[in-house]
Amino acid sequence: MRPLLMLALLFAAPGLMAQKAAKLKPPVVASYAPDLKLWRLEVAPDLGGWSSDRTVNLRLKLVDPKDPNPPKDEPGRRYYDDYEDEGGYDPGGEDTRTAEQLRQARLEREAETARQAWRARTLKVWFNGATLSWSVRVGHTLNTDLTAQNGENRLEILEPDSGLRVVRSWWVSTARTRLRVVSIHANDEYTGGSLQVLEPDGAVAEGGRRTASGGMLRWSGEYTHDTPPPGTYTLKWMGGWRGGKPARIKVEAVLDGGTDQERRWTWERLILPGAGPVTMGTFDVEP
Image (spheres, rainbow, N blue to C red):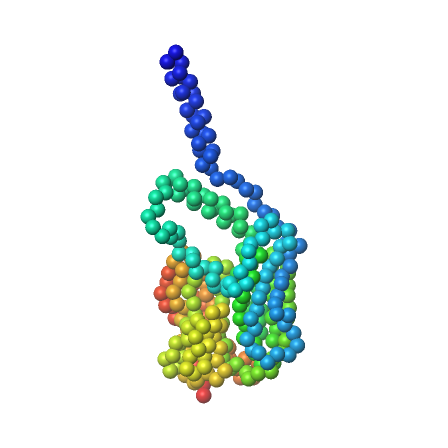
């Protein structure tokens, strides 16, 4: 009787192990295939007519009406917030998970990332002669600031995959902004970091801070100055996300845009993950 019991256990063991492995394997959920023809691009405020405000608090949202699991939108989120917490897993204490549990958690994260990959989109944007790329996620609101110029302004937004296009034009009657500097990711890889502008007197313009002379570098990566003091301006790219990929960063500077004295400068550099300060270039403003 005992030998028969041992044989039964031997034959049953592989089946039990297979059942255990099957339980550990994360469930496979079919990826959602969106119908791009149904998408819509929501833009607020409804730009048009005349305005006395140069700063536009723009809100964009790419909407899929058939979205099987619409994300909970956060109206206050700005596009640069998406990467603030991507420093890696921080359990807040000792991680007691086994190697198998860690592997399963990784597989589940990868599966979820693959299921949500369809949400990641890149918008092509043209604003007053500048070419930009904005990364968005379907169902999430993108909040960003635009600095309008005195006179006519034109904003064009294209979602290449669906062909959705939005064009807005409006007029602003304010003092003219003489100097404008914008930073652009020349490809779709997110490398992190930010633009820094060193003014002729040594003042440093960083994200969200206004210098003593009146220069302002917004979180959107745009630097403006109505009355830039004469001298040499130095542009640097600061920091970078160590978990990112190499990316090409492009910086454009425009002085006296829209006039017969307009001057333009363009620089482009390859930024490596975790790179320190990288000098993009310099330019001079004459008295």
